[in-house]
Image 1 (tube, rainbow over the protein chains, first blue to last red):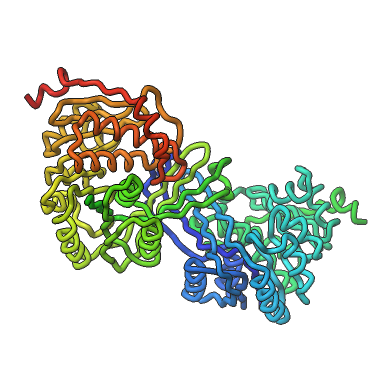
Image 2 (tube, one colour):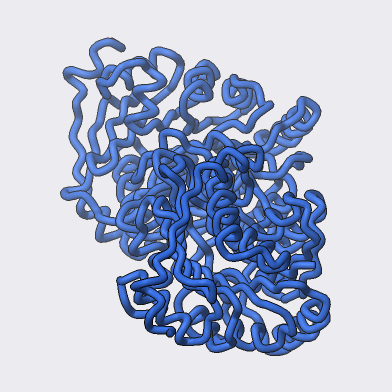
Length: 307
Length: 307
């Protein structure tokens, strides 16, 4: 079983606004409302691929109830811990470009955080892999991901940003998945290879940097590997990172060698790009996309600092 | 008592995103969540100015309950009619520019619409003025505003767009308040003076066209009057139209002569522009803004068609 943790679960609204005009009043053509937050999206992807998964984290208020109802409706097993404040919403505008707006999230009390830790320990004890994803709501300790990684008896995948990522790496997660901007913020360098090495040095067992259309640069115990599609896939990039994390977690759970794990992850991310709605993916396209993935080793120049 | 009608009431979210970047993931700095829809905002403004007002219309679902709870919390008397589907949400991004996204609204059944008409007739019977504002949710007849205007024994103010406005004018509302874009869509001409004359010819007792920084052009039984501030007021224009309508309704209820009614309306709209949150206004600035209003008659060339 894979356990995904979403401490700042959200009700995600996707607004289709084909002719969105900034600075004006825009009528929304179609509204998609669904449970979200990175870990919830990862759980949905894993469930859709037939993996045994449980989504946990914190939810509260009317939005929290809708998050749990939505997961139940789509058959994704969930075991969230309650908070008194209301879970946040996010709004993604899909028009000529894709723009996302994220609310900060509910204020979590110390009692609520400790109650979650009890539930987390029980779930992590049976987990083949634990996935820690997304932002921390107000009130949760900034080093929450380091603590959750330490408490997990099995392997951990971390996908976070800013302080949550920087402090979380100290918990020695097995895999860390930053995008280029998150990597730069956490490592303090704009150089991807250098940032990836810095995160490994800080405690990450492996670092998989997602570079959008340029695929991923992975610094792993099996070497430094660059994986990408032969040509970028057009579509909505929202959710592609979650699909990438889902594939990395599944590969980790199944003991898939790094090269195949990365090929599948890049292809699955492309399946998500093809879907306009965050968290959904066009799995039927997986075989064709897998055939378009290229992988090359950069062992020679990038791994030396670890030898 | 003034009755405001909001058939497509909304839960309005205002997101403060000072550095909003289109095409990216934006963290929302502050969230303001409040009941909305044009008629609800008009009721809030009138209540804040000490006028006796009742907000009616249609609400449904969890969002509908929050709309009613929010109005109760701010002391605005409300008497909404229930629908089974959930009321819509709107999201306004306040960043380098102000962009609004409006969901279409709940599907209203014929039975729900007729139930509302019964409630409306009872409220309109005691109303000094009825204000009909905003879009029509799916399922409500396109000529709903014409029917509501005809059923009202007293004077009616109409603020709508597109077909709802075009068909609504046939109900002979006493005042119609389009902005430049709404006027062009309803009259089929880009010329403001010509469009204003067309709406009066179609049944409006008076037409007050709001032209943003250029103030208003009003075609009234007392002549054609152009009213504006000495210089445009910087700020958030969302809600300015609702403040303008509130002042026009109050002036109509109080029998205030058109020139003073327009001066106050333009000044009150500017008070709303000064507030970053839709539906709120900086009433303390009213005297200073009133002193900056200029009014001139354009009787000679614009009114001739009616003589």
